Length: 237
Image (tube, rainbow, N blue to C red; front, side, top):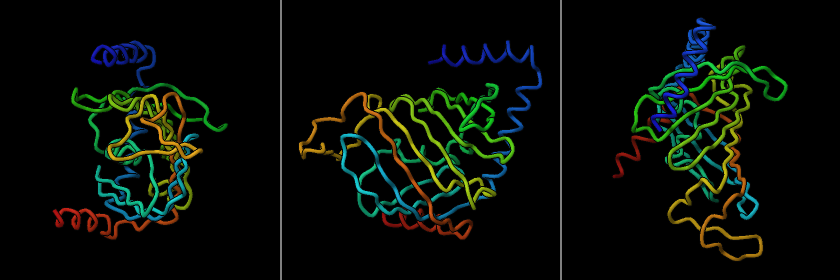
């Protein structure tokens, strides 16, 4: 793992000798994204969650999500099952960006849905991090992250895609889609699944693609409701 980190950094250093302003530009762009996200101290959001895997029958379920800056995040599902990264914080882009200690590398530009995006790679500085590498597709005009790809130590690589609407000024998406491959994903304890014919697998089938889609209808931002949710949880313990 350490070799991989130095490999990426080595490539970046060579690249910077040719384009010395690149690292500064990438870091400045990320700071603009973080500045927008930093407006949000906490929120409570309402929406729906849909899990889409070929071998599963999972109905669309209503959800509430709660966030407190920089990295406290949880989803509350009234029914249904979803597959999410361990701790669920990985589905929330603010938690990935604001709480991390990482090296920022510029990776050029690319197209996403026929729009030009800036590519930025984040390599965690701490060896204890569960994340190996995160790649961000950043809309440099709106200063929001449109896509991220994160490689983890335990759950392989998962991708997030975000769509923005009326909450774009806060950097908060209206829609988040989490993509994963079941061969890399560990089945959460206590969860079982059924195939379409009603039979139950012994474990999560390998080499299957899946997605979890969250559509947010509304956010209540900086009203203290996210903080209250975590305080209530702590008080019940």
